[in-house]
Image (cartoon, rainbow over the protein chains, first blue to last red):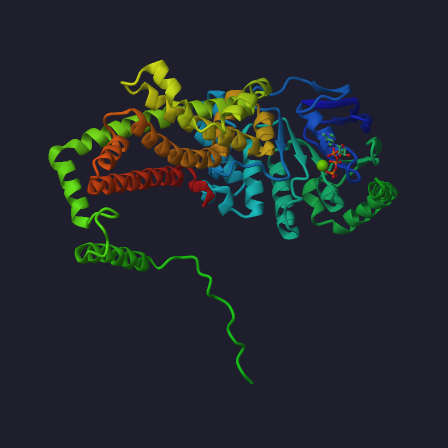
Length: 255
Length: 261
Ligand SMILES: Nc1ncnc2c1ncn2[C@@H]1O[C@H](COP(=O)(O)OP(=O)(O)OP(=O)(O)O)[C@@H](O)[C@H]1O
Ligand SMILES: [Mg+2]
């Protein structure tokens, strides 16, 4: 399935948040969305997933979603959004329970996604008993359980420390390599963007507009080894963003 | 050079359990001794053996089961249905803006009324005899704190979790049952803890005003007959009733809220 964001504009009251944003998510590709604080990245992602309606513009799904997909557009949240009273397996089960799957099938899916996120030994652990990285892995397992067509991730690694972040990026890349998924990946972190993105969309400061779309040709699996090229790319991205970020910072200070 | 002096400690909050037991036994001993020596007037406090005799009498005649049975029935019915109605209304108010707008002012207006003031009204409605008036009073007493705590609990459920549920396409009912209700459970249970003690107060007051049996009536008759042994026995039964109810709620909390650790 191809996802097309077409000419989205949006206001919150007097504040113009997004202006005429268009982009395409091709099957099997990860789009990273970067831009200064408050430029409307989270808002755009909510609209892509249908959690909020834009004032103008639309999001189109081209091509039928696979019939196996229980929830074509699936989020992974910054704060994990796990139910604290359910175990890791229970949190995954939550999103399968409404779909009339036979019990055995449901349990097979749960076991499979927990194995893919290396959590099999923690199936019965409550979120508070898990580290931050493991909690986000539970959330990733939950997202994989519904066989999404597009993963929508809003700063999925921001709540984690730097080392855990590295490990989880490797995990995500490995998951993608095993079974490519499409994703919109919002981040503040340029290092994440150059590691994860097939294309990097740079938004301007508020009102968010597409300033530039940078294609990254290095295959995902090779990126960890080709640090120098990534560093160079990251430098280039920063130069493109720098003025916007500074201006946004000044605006926030003056607001 | 001297060691660093120790400055921590001293504010331990864990009790030494045996101290409590020693204090209890000492007080009982003092009571017995004071009554035997005539330091304590029997009008002020009956000797412990009178209280024991009252208990023995209650068990031998089997009247304890009349009184306790009647009281437990009223308390159980009133508290259970009051809490059930309270949770339902609180949940509806938390989920629907029109219900909140409609029921909010009514709840706010009735909440501060001491529910015992409604007993005469319920007696007019349901008659003096029968359980209706007493159960209704207790039911109202349980209803309001439960509504308010349920509503607060629903309001406090993490919006992020609800958005997560929506984003995975969960039905509205599934979100209520699997996300909102468990999320509000701590607040609902603490409301039920509060309402249980309010209900015991109302139970006794209602039984003193208009009942032939029940622990409240037993205490009232004992007082009227200057049977202080019976009176103290009744008060002790109430203490045990309150402790048992609190213990039961504690048990439920432990089971339902184990995830909080
Ligand atoms: N529900 C809302 N009502 C009103 N204003 C909102 C709402 N949500 C976001 N905003 C405003 O819209 C602007 C864009 O918010 P958004 O969260 O999309 O930015 P962002 O790019 O994700 O920022 P960050 O990088 O800090 O996460 C901000 O100025 C924010 O204050
Ligand atoms: Mg954001």
